[in-house]
Amino acid sequence: MTAHRRAILMGDPSHFSVVGGANPHTRTRWGTRRSVDRALAIRQWERLKSTIEELGVEVVVVPPDPAQPGLVYPANAGFMLDPDTPLRREDRLFTLANLLPTRAGEKPHYRGVLEQAGIPIAEIDERHRFEGEADFFPAGDGYLLTHGRLERQRFVPTLAIPPWRRVYGFRTDAAVECVLAPLVAPRPVLRIELTLEAHYHGDTALCAFGPGRRFLLGYREAIAPDGWRRLESEFGERLIPLSSEDARRYAANSFPLPQHGESTLLMPDGISDRLLAQIRERGVTPIPIDVSEFLKKGGGSVKCKIGDLGIRL
Image (cartoon, rainbow, N blue to C red; front, side, top):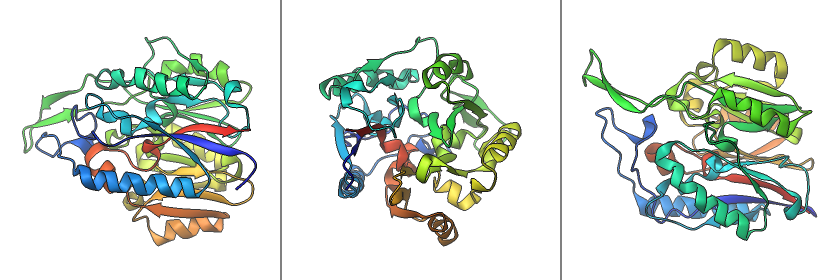
């Protein structure tokens, strides 16, 4: 373990369930909400937590609330400024997210846990929908801001079987760039539009990893063409395109520990041997772990279950 220690948020899964059904993974093709095997989810969560702790990371647990099952996905809580810079906890700054209405009740829980941990908190104008580090995260020399069209979630008729479909939309408003860019300046912000509702957050389609987060996993089909061209220009050979199979397993929803010594990448179980080899070739150790119940029923894998609180002195 290094002299400095990273801390993360994880949400206790004791009340994990699908209530709102706010992304395509949470519902069947008939539109009904999926049922969670909570005992399995708890076992998977505990295994993820113990694996992270074995890597020398401090886990700060968000207590459960039966009215807020989405607390198991604290990547949406907000974002920590400069998470890879060692700082005293009291010198850090965590900016809280403005979540979609069905999850807005989570905000006071995150605030309470962060205040108890002694971490300073900031907020942004509530007019801006913004779902935290799931859509705003460091990559290479700058930050990626992912966004998509915001929709009122609803059923609409179609000429198919079943004769309706669910509209989900995306989670972060592109207009929030004017608020976030000054916070990370002089580091540039690269804005990327998402196009597939099944990849409704940027951290389900993109993952920066390795020393300096200089490598990037990316799922081309989930990114608007102009955004993909910008990623190719920025990252060049450091951009690793994901296959459809690895993307469906949420390979991009991985949590990096970008140490300059031995970098690791916590990944969903079932990733292809080819992708695992590509990661190892870049001097990074992949650690697959099974959190399938959270992906299949809630639409979030490894990274969704982690909020990065940065490295502390």
